[in-house]
Image (tube, rainbow, N blue to C red; front, top):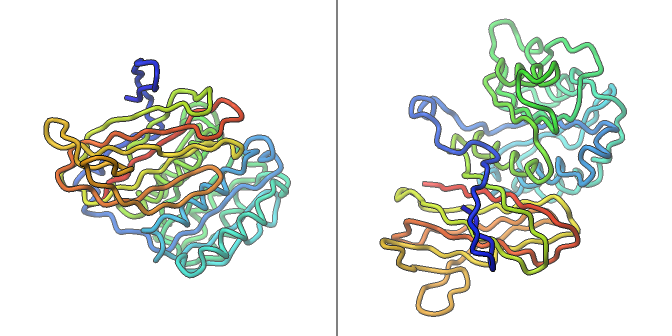
Amino acid sequence: MWRTAGTGVATVITALVAAGAFASAAAAQCVPANNIEAVIDDSGSMSFSDSNELRRSGLELFIQTPQNAQKVLGAVEFGSPPAGTVFAPGLIGPNKAAMIARLRAVTAADNGGTDYDSGFLSGFLQNLTAKARIFLTDGANNGDFTNTHLLAYPQGTKPPPVYVVGLGIGKAGTGDDANRLAAIAQQTGGRYFPDVQQASAQAVFNSISSLVNCQALPATFTSKLFFSKGQQQTRGFKVSTSTKRFSVVLNWAQPTNKFTISGIRALGKKNKLLATLSGKGKPRKIKVKKLSSPTFLVLDFKKPSGTRKLRITIKASTLNASELTVTQLSSRG
């Protein structure tokens, strides 16, 4: 649980995305998807449903994730027909900077209505060999939805899984829009992420990174609201003995705020302190690789030998408005 510094009050945190490993049978059948197509809603309604452009920064986080460097990624944006190209399919590693620059230049909530078929068809034609798709939308389909995500493939050929991100759209059973999005994921063997709000948009893209790499979903936790600069909250949780590396991804929604990971404590048997982020005192220092943007921070590091538990502290270093954060811990064997 998170513990708010200075209050001593513990609070249970609701998981944003259910965490845990794939079932052993499913994991054995999983093949990492090394060619992915993103189909991103950039209709006019995005100007208020995603005013901080977290759909863009979420895909940017996907691009920045080290295990995705050798994947091919293409992206289209859609609204009213025709859909447009964000960037053509290419290997992420050498094209990372160019892909991010195009994302920042193109996503502007300027594509009119919301036509699912236009987006799916454009994504299909741009990347015929994609092994997975990421589909993000905030609204109802304004066109005549004809299951193009299925019909664009030869009869008897299964389409690639579609990982569907519903910005503010509820789970299956809450309405026609939700049912349609859930069906797209179910019919293709993908997954539906419903009712995505604020910083959780970035966290969902990070979860999709795990799914396309056949890895366990990250443990995902939301904090209590931060109300003042300098406020800190700490999360402690157990880790597997088979883990070799960790990635901690800290997400928030408002680019005028800034949060940092101010402390990491690696604990062994009987809570013996093994290593810290600062390296002050006797414990050795945890050496991290760092990635950052205006709304997320990633620390990647090797597990200190003997670690049984991590305690991670989040700090509000700049706070212009109260906000909660979403933190994810990914473990790699």
